[in-house]
Image (cartoon, rainbow, N blue to C red; front, side, top):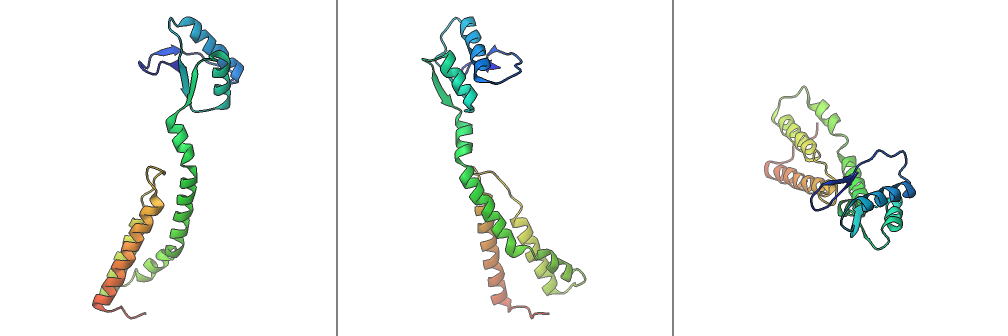
Amino acid sequence: MRRDCLSGAILLARAVLSSSHTDLAALLEEAKQALPVPIPGVFSAGQLSKRLAVAQALPAGAYQRCQFHALREAADPIFEADRHAKQELTKPVRGIRAIERALEERTDEEAEARRGDCLAVRSSLTDDGRPPVWASGLLWHHRLSLLSTSISHGEEKRGAFPQR
């Protein structure tokens, strides 16, 4: 399907068996012949077959890659780094379920405080997003740092609970 960028009007819609550049160029030629105005340019997600089709059917036309797709691809290294950061951040807190199980039967003040800490850790790791709009690994790091500082401050204030 081909649309006009300004109006959104469908210029040509056809089912195709192949997305080869020759088949796509034929569709562009058909659209070019059917339109009463010239086609100054095309933009798409950047597939090679589409770029070749535009070059063949509209040699004087401009070609631009869709900004969304270009930015998403540019963000891939950030996404991978953020994904790795999230994996590393979860390693130190993997034992949280064991702590929660050990506290299940207890109702004392220390157990309640520790359960609250465990819940805070769990909730700090719930957001997920796709960079570059949102780097959740950075958010997780920030939250866990604040939580660590809060727990340390609380233990200093009331005295660390004795180890059991």
